Length: 471
Image 1: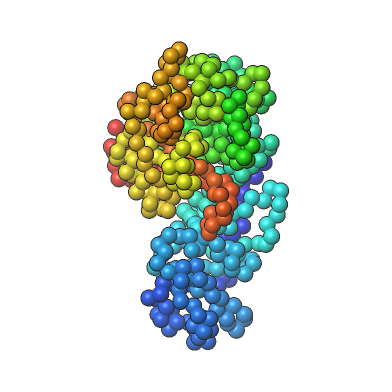
Image 2: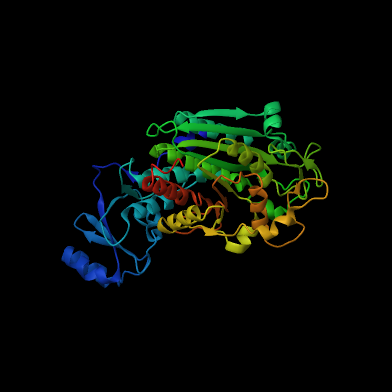
């Protein structure tokens, strides 16, 4: 299964040299120019069909051999998503090439590929997708392949993707790119990551931490260190603070943060960005048993900070506490974590906007700007210190929750901040990792939220100031 996730090919792409039909994408003001460039009979057919370049409007053009091309309306939509359902709307198995126009061709190709995604492990697709002629080494194809990997990981059912299997996927990724990787479990994990061990103790499937290091062949030995941490809860029952059954229905996706940083690491290594890379994921299952942590237990952490368990369903922050503490020991240039951490972030921002918390304004602005540019949005929430005292405990250094019902996402971020060194630039992304309903380019199921935004921001910051990056 792991090998399939890493090797799955994009069946929506055709190699160069294949005879492909032209796909025109136009706005209302461009119609007359397009009609003048087409065969008169094809132009008259499109006009007679009532085509008005409305967003998502599609018309197939007739020709001597049947179909001679297609025209897609863009309306006023500047996003790539009008291209996102074409793999299913254009004739099955047909091959197409995008004709340049008033749109970002790279993002359009990416949206085409993202919309062609299906999770095929148990149920074959109803039809083959239409295909786009695109070099497999082009950025759109590379990014689409990584998004497919992340989606496959999140969509995999928990009985097939447990802590060990998620760890295997990370180790397979390391082997693919020549990274150094360690699988940490058993007594070693309990000693080095005590909070991770406590969270995973309730499951018959033991917890695993994977630690990966990679040095870019394009970077010197003192290149900036980018450190990534991910929450990998392969299924979250809530523990003794058991979730209601309805709230468990999507809890296979609680490893979405780990999948996202794995995808981000793959993009970084594929592009050979001039950095040193560290990746840490905590792979666990939060279950109920005689060995599970209980409410009001006090846990040790790697940082030496004791934590009272106010709620066993607030387990993700316990995992990240140990990962962030170890990551800070290496003094990274940038530390970033991703996690499906709180329902409060979804209440505040909904499913489409991951919440960004950041202790560095320049990085926060760069991430938000990049998300806007690549249509992978983020929204910043504050690390409001006024709520920090809400985490106080009478018997431990801190509690893992607040007794107050307000600002849950902020309180969770403040919890994590206590495990981040003051001199480390840090960003925390609280994401949903899921599409609740199908939309163009975004099928229902697992999603790689914020990954492309982070990669774009990181690439831009390195390109702008390569000499200052290590400072």
